[in-house]
Each structure stands twice: as C-alpha cells, then as structure tokens.
Image 1 (cartoon, rainbow, N blue to C red):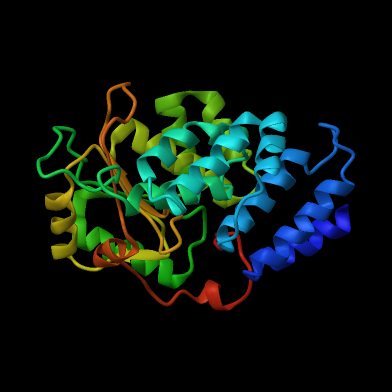
Image 2: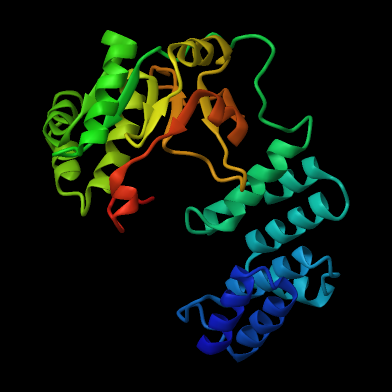
Length: 298
C-alpha cells in the first residue's frame, strides 16, 4: 500500500492525474480499511476521485457511495467539486462542501479549491463591495525579524521607518515577547519564546498583533512599493479584513490587513488576486534567499 501511495503522490505532484488516480485506487484496495492505518482509506478514495475530476473523467457512482460510507464530509467535498467543475454550479458546490474542510488537516487542497471556486464565480465571490463596511483597517504597518538582521533587512526597516514614520513598528524577539506579555500575558509570551524556530514565532506574533491592534502585517523580505501605494491601499480597503491570494489560490500570510473587531469575529472579508498584491508590495534582493535554506523560506 505504501509503495502505491508513494507512486500516486509523485504522479499527482507532476500533474499526471489520471495515472495517479489508478495508483491511489491500488493503494485503497491494498489498505486494511482500519481507521488506525494511515493514510486513512477515505483519504485515498477521495484523492483518487479528485484526480479523476482533474482528468475530466466520470466518477464511478459505486465509489462515490463507498466514500459516503467512510466519510460523508469527504463525499460532500467531492460532490461539491463535481457540481462546480462539471455542472457549472459553483454556489451549489460551495454549499455542498460546507465545512467539510474541518475533517482535513489545515492547508490541504480542499482549502485552495474552495477558495478558487469562491473567487472565480459570481455572485458567490469575495470581491470588494462598492461601499466601505465601517470597519476601517488602521493605517499602521508591522514587521518582524528575530535578531541580528542582515544589512538588507536593516535597510528595509529603515526604508519603512522613513516612509511611514510613526505608522511603522518593527519587532524583534525581545520586543515581540514583551509586547505579548504586556497585552496577552505570560503564557502567550512564553509560548512565543519557546517556538521551535523563528518563523513559528513570527506566525504567532502576527496573529496576536493584528488581532489586538488591527493594521497591516508585512514580512521583512517584502517592501511597500511607495508612499503612493500605501495611500492607495488605505483608500481601496472597504472591509474589515483584506487578504490576497496567489495565482494558485493560496492565501498570503506575508501581507494582509484587518480592522480591530472588538471581540467580534471577522464578518466582512475582501480577498484579492496576486496582481493586486503586486500593486502594493514587491520583493527585493535579499542575500539569505541566495545562500541556502533558512527559516525564512516559507
């Protein structure tokens, strides 16, 4: 089973989806069908059926029924994708998928495909409304580097300090830990300091900072294009949360903004494209990217 699964994954990775579906089926047939054996049988069957959809092949209804027996949520997911892709019914597809993502690990393909359907099909997309929602994103930018930033990162911090003045805050490990302690207590601060690597700590800090203060987060290996881009960002933000999607429908966590919601969940979200992302920020030459793997490679 393990060998068939490995072959299927390699084929899937290289977009040989019809061939991958064949090997996923072999792996499923060789599986002991126990819920203690990983990958789970329903995982193998759903990815086989997904590969058939990607290959524009019909779905065997007996396999759909089989998947329903193992996992109704997985079956809803596959049926939802079929409705959106094959039958041109994106709204029905999204409704079928519903919260099926809760049965998957975070970051699996269901997240990307759901977002792709939502963004590409009106009226169920997540484009900006014509009028502002009333939850204004604070015009403040936050960045982070744990310690001993290389020259280009230090220069990037100075660039943003000169550009934005008091509307810019750069954290390091010490100031980040102190801020978390002051605003969220010792336990959260210690969790930040115990992060296995700095990228994990940065992920924790960015969420707490934006949750508490609102504003914009930008990774240190990116920079605002100009003061004009910064002002345009403010003027074009019409909701309480603004996110950007890559060309492959993965949400950026290196640049995003949100308003202070005062304890309420985010109810109005504006999700835009990679082209919109590139309007406001840009990459620049950073030495560590060319010198081999580091924790900053996401």
